[in-house]
Length: 128
Image (cartoon, rainbow, N blue to C red; front, side, top):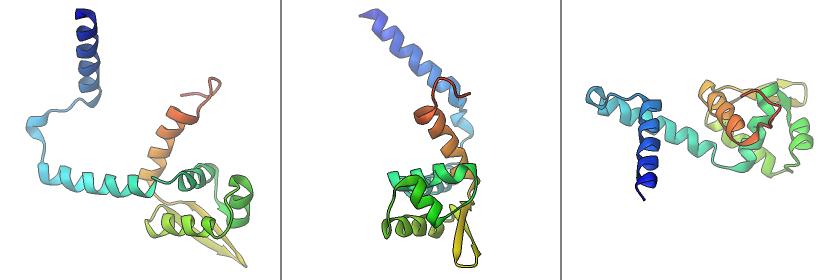
């Protein structure tokens, strides 16, 4: 029983060390603003189709037709999810003739996508 308690305590110590927080110096107002911003980003990412679309856009920009073929997401859901990403500032658009190309606009979204890829998608052969 004491081994389990020691293990849980060491896991807690590891998490504390990873965050390396000095809570005595936290500006609660700034932290609240950051939490609100982070929450909005996570809400935008909280749909599997939107995550799949952003995964495709990490590599390079893509047009709607290519995104539909690559992801299997059909219209009108594809346009709806791209609209959410665009409205939340996560993607940029570029028109070329009749085609609209999408690319990732948000550095924060890109950083989160990289972590999600490492944690959930990377295979043993991928570098982490």
